[in-house]
Image 1 (tube, rainbow, N blue to C red):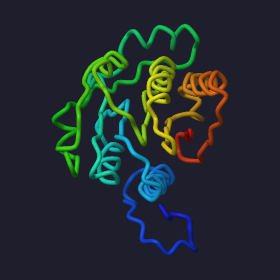
Image 2 (image 1 turned 135 degrees about the vertical axis):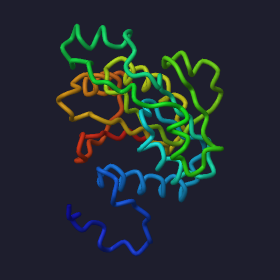
Image 3 (image 1 turned 180 degrees about the horizontal axis):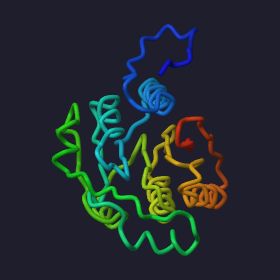
Image 4 (image 1 turned 90 degrees about the horizontal axis):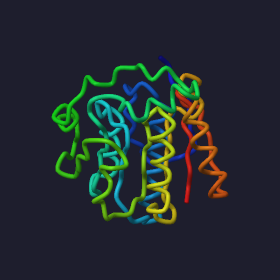
Length: 205
């Protein structure tokens, strides 16, 4: 698939894997990672909703000197999160994301020594985390873990940090939009939608 020209007037060399299925999402991550480095925003990196680690490996690559927290059941959706999903008709919540493992994810990380695995139900798995963050990826698909992720990470996000939420404009997971809109209204903060394949959204602190 041909990629439309972008940033034609930026002379900085950008390293983007064009084999990744979503160029806009990955290109946005690269630009954000550069901003974080240029502005010296402190903090670790995190992803909630890792699955096979295909996006996490780029977080690990673009932030090689920072701890990367990887939160996931590594067994698919938890039944506790399905209840609201089905009750509000946000999605069918029947997608199978169980074909993964901690070992499989770590095997594709360029810097596995920087990864901190948090296996289990989020946000319970964050109870012992005493850290602040510069970038967080939320890719859990369902309303409750998206909302809980925002509630947990936004106060721990350093000034100049970013949260990227996947599936904001994905009508197969309508709860994601509702969770983001609710949280941002409560906090009186804005967000920026992206035109990537699943319609991600970015929140900046």
